Image (cartoon, rainbow over all chains, first blue to last red; front, side):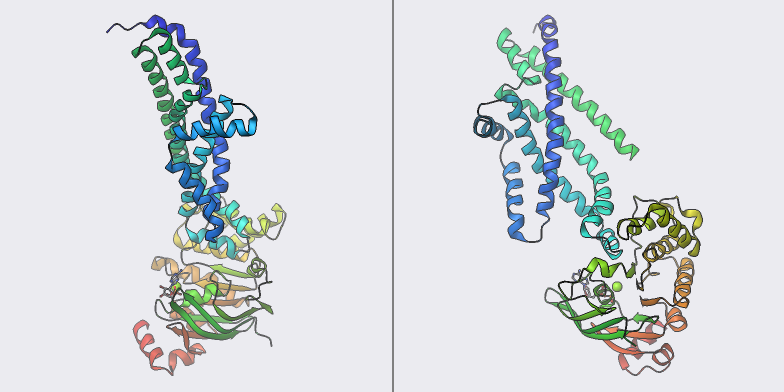
Length: 215
Length: 243
Ligand SMILES: Nc1ncnc2c1ncn2[C@@H]1O[C@H](COP(=O)(O)OP(=O)(O)O)[C@@H](O)[C@H]1O
Ligand SMILES: [Mg+2]
């Protein structure tokens, strides 16, 4: 097997740009997904099953279908419907955010329910409203416990964002495919992409371990 | 004199399991009522109904003239007048000792930070823990944690204090320091309802002792009478086991 470093060298600037897009998609989706997920997580903790139902359905649908399919539906269905035409950047952020919201909702719910009920009761017994006890007592403790799970979810997003190559969002995998198409080579483009993903997730893992130690 | 707490025909069940059958009692201002009884008899549930941490299925609870069972009653306002101390302390682990005490006065009473801090320091001095103001609860012993929890409840300046086995989770050598704080409170005239197995405390501080079994108040009376000359065979049996 001959391995041609020159074509990798030539594509490197494009791969680096793709890396920025990958990071951008991942950050935007974890942020938007978390905000949406917080609301859905609270929705899933509603006592009334009728009110809770839509939130359960949301989570089940997004966790029960492939991201691959979700991206196609968002890109060719939802985005044209609301935006008028397809747009890979919008589709990418929307699809990943909607998907990660379902996972974030579960992280929030599990985190909040992991806080001992005595904490909430102590807050309520002092005269705090349910909202105040959530905000000042339960959530701060829950969020601390959620950090590892959110870190994990972020790493999953970095890897899963590679599926956005499907709709020609210019992230790492897109350039890998382009390079393959141009040179008709397998190892150079795909190994380059793999190495970049690995460097990203490995550094994120290290960063996460550091943050957890500091907490 | 109007009782400060008036409970009528209180009923509470969890699913099909009836925990409180039909409990009625009046408690006067400045009175110290000690609740004793075997484990599982409903003592905690009774106490937790008094600030609606448990929602009763029936009956009436009137505190300072406010009917808790009335849908229009704002329960969090009632709770500002009814402090509670838990067996497991339930201090907020992410907040320093002084922040534990200041949180509710600032958020609920809307006191300025300085006033809340002043009050918190005063209370820490009262429970003998002024030097612990800036540490986190994790570094406290059980006895210290429970004294901070009492100070935290007192910061709201409640009229009534509920204690649910405040010394049961403590190593024996720390029980005394917590009981001492509670005795001080009783002496100052705080209305107190105390679930405890500390019969010495009940005798010394209690104005009245309630013996509960299977979700009912079997017998009540001044400590000398209840301990010295119990009327019910159930009470006698229980006391013979714990005394
Ligand atoms: N949240 C709950 N759900 C179901 N059963 C409960 C709950 N809390 C208490 N119980 C039951 O109610 C009974 C009385 O409990 P409790 O009031 O804690 O008794 P005590 O404090 O006297 O030991 C027990 O049988 C207990 O199992
Ligand atoms: Mg109990």
